[in-house]
Length: 270
Image 1 (cartoon, helix red, strand yellow):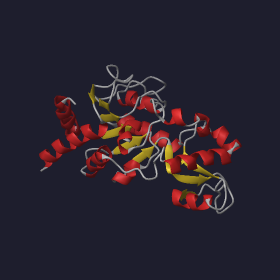
Image 2: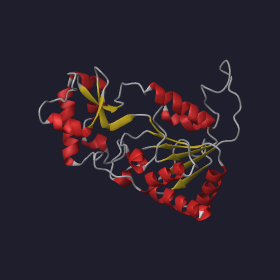
Image 3: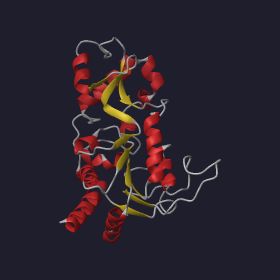
Image 4: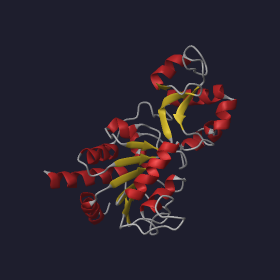
């Protein structure tokens, strides 16, 4: 952890008018939530096709059996996971007005549990389910009770319930997409935390923040120049953004880096 870069980040956060955050799986692994792609991740332990919408619609019983097995074996401990220091720091920074929005690729609800109020969920939320017929949502407590009586679980209207997360083959929710792109276009500071920056369209957000790839700014396909925006990465290792898009990378555990940033900001606000 480079303390000089930590100090620089603190200065930029305090000076920013519209700072936002983009988070990926790396912020939640410290809460015991495994990621999908890394060695030992979900894809090595479970069949990835279980998360394709075509598979769910064709074999909802099998997909729900897999999800229930994950829940019972604690392999995918979203339901019991608790926010870590990283999530808590972001909630604190929002509370004191230093960040405006958290855009997350995660489906674990941990930002909300930590107290963040303005969260855009790019890929939905696995702690809730939605009826494919009437669109009503339920918490997982309802699902677990329902699974004791019927399999797969159904809504009160009789419609099939599906986890309220974006499966492969499904579109990103349009409201989340539109609002995220607007936030990236408007920000003057973006913290990119715990993401590989390889999954689109979220991977484009830091480039939009820098004015490199905006579908919003400009006229007739000709981009307009954007005022200076800083993009700071907090990650274990470099990403495609490093040295190309981001101003600098702070290497280390997201929770530890963010907690250190919080401590320094609390000193200044004391």
